Length: 134
Image 1 (cartoon, one colour):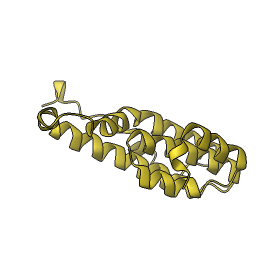
Image 2 (spheres, helix red, strand yellow):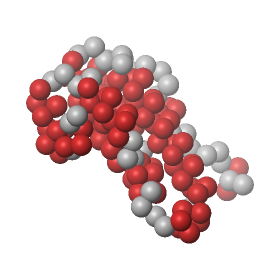
Image 3 (cartoon, one colour):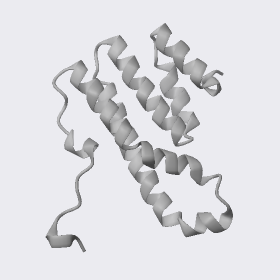
Image 4 (cartoon, helix red, strand yellow):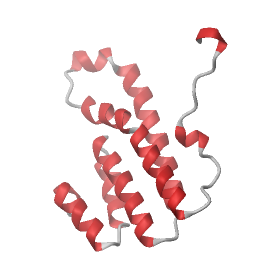
């Protein structure tokens, strides 16, 4: 039950259902989506390190946070596909790759990393996250 009949606030990726008007707005939207989902990604990424007893205690929260992270990543990827400027797209992909790495979603992070074409962004990601190489 919500206090005073208020509905649950919508997530930022649900609010940005309409396409951003340009590449700069799209990159900013992706950055905002990734920042708002960081806490969920951190929780999902740290779940495997918990003991079995602790995992059972927070299983329901993990499912909710995992769903939230996945919805955010999907929305950010859909917006990134529409960005026409290569540098803007690669900067946005960097944000999404880092979100995936926080959630310990290595497979998705590697796939997105391969789509990054700008050498300076690729090199920076490799310096920070050596596990992307392979």
